[in-house]
Amino acid sequence: RVEPEPGEHRAMIYFNQVLPEGGDHVVRVKFSVGVAVYGLVGEVERRGTLHDVDVVGGTNPLVARLDISSEGTAHVRMAGQYAIYPAVDYPGTEQTGWSPDVHPNEIEVPEFAVSAGALPARPVLPPTRRDLLLQTRGELPPGDYILDLNGDLQGSAIDMAVPFTHEQSTLVAGADTA
Image (tube, rainbow, N blue to C red; front, side):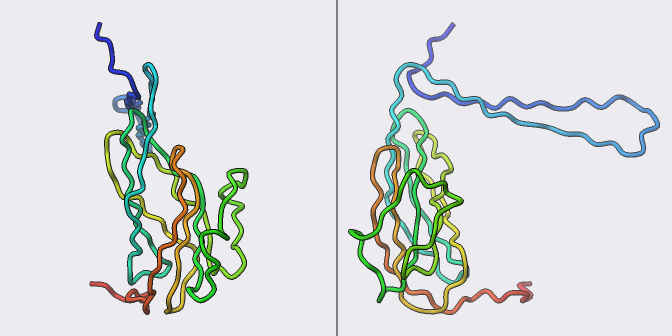
């Protein structure tokens, strides 16, 4: 027996179907199912950092890259929402926020904003640093905007405004990219 280190431990269990040999089967289907198993040993520490937010240009709907790391002994997740405001209509970070009681599917677009939605809630495993992509809702006309982020990363508040300029999309629907 080996005493595991304190913290979160993960494993995948795969279930594979074993098909019978031969037979008069017309259609043969085989499946494999993976199940994630998380185990916690001792006290776990969920500590994450949002290092950077970068708006990716040339896409419509807009895509933002969130650079997140997990420095503790267990995975971290974000909770919260984003909103996109025309720069001239942005009320400031003091006037924006989020409620943890609102379900991510029930987030409403705030006054003066052109889009809103939930922050990605995918886990970041320890001790890693990864980019989570936030694909916004709806298309934006060219102009100057503010991406407003409000939420929580395992106890660390997220309250930031990211200015960006959205130019005409370089992606044309139905265009041949070959």
